[in-house]
Length: 417
Length: 223
Image (tube, rainbow over all chains, first blue to last red; front, side, top):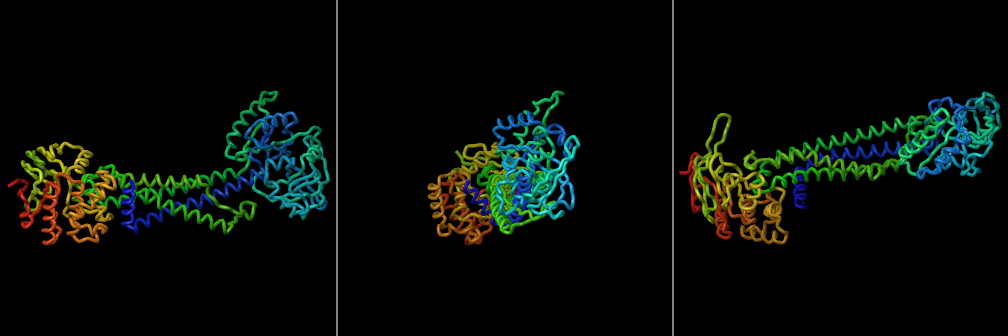
């Protein structure tokens, strides 16, 4: 086999210019896929991380019907203490769930005693919220003296930066929040601005934060109630599996009317970015198809030319007793080596390109988020997958010319001019 | 028993509606260790005769036995294996593989066809290279060799597997006068040294004289 590879390599080097040009073309295709996968993939991963780790959480459980009317933030679709306990019991017994946190979502009027505006608030239990969204604090600005581990204390709110800028509110400023409860009665409480949060895309990206106990007080909840339970899993790759499992278990909780009490959604159902993520996946597949086409056409072309140019040589091989299988393996080896050289070159150049992109810290603006720094990378499995595809296609593209060579009648091939 | 036995062999080529008889009702036998030439003008059927003996082509009619086996009934795979085992080929245009050195060209049938172990291979190649006086040129590629040297390498390649029969189709056609005589004498020496049967075709009268037996073909018939 080594001899066949040696002969195949020398045959490729015999037509240096053609081999180099073909190899450059395939290398270009691989580099394109690696760079695109690195950039688009890292953007996708970063955005999903941002959405799930600092804002939305990986999954959310609500009272049945809440998500369909999520825009109005209804206060009548709450989970009472008994229902929350049921959910807690379910989640605490699930080995793949790492954390969960109760939340209340509400609309309120915010006044700085000069101007008034409306604000969407996410009332959280800070110590639990940090476990569910570990990066929630990373997009917030606090007073320098404050312990960054404490998100919120009762009596404090964190407001979105656009709102803070618009109303000229600074950290430490007093404000008033006024909200209607589910019965329609109005209540107002004084708060202090504890921090300012960056805006991110998505339905909960422009929300402020307050303590859950304050929200229960503001909304005059006699008994503790929550609107949603945010859930985090140990392994993000198992999210769909855990979702399906929890979904089937939650379906077992039936209300008096015989209908399900709860509903559960993954971030994909809750964030519009999931559609962009799907588009990115689609574009990545398209890039791979383009690469496959480049490899297929260029190797098929070069191998066909190689067979047509070496008909007499093939005739000699066959005449002196080389079996058709050996002749075929020689041409398949040529295609494979061409693919292998291009794959190695493509991987080296592609990875070097990613390294350079990382050095230059490429930043982009997306939606209302500015200065998103990309750290493009491609994982080993993706790299192996691309490499294997190129090698397989190289052999596949060589198959027809190799088969043709192996089927040549020596007497005809020797007489070829 | 004759090494090559040809009985009532005809070869007819069909070109559209026209039938061309390249060989007609040939009967002959060639003994082991013979040095035989087929002579005749262009188109007389010399190459067709060698192709049929070498299992490169099938007769339209008749029977061909080489080394006691009826080769015209072999399938593709069997023919290739038989050629590798029993027959060596020398071509008019040398047909050396341009990407292989002289040594590697001779090694080719031992690696690709015979699967001989490396040590034995080297021994066999050096022996045959020495016999064709090409030891000092063994690392050169075909394009670095003269026509005569190329044909010496081709002779060595044909002999390295120790075939019973070597077929050479116009082996001197692309060589000058001196090289032609040298190559044909080399072939005869090799025939004596390796006890191999040589069958070659030529239309060169000086080369014909070197053959022990000469068959003359004219318009597809032995005369």
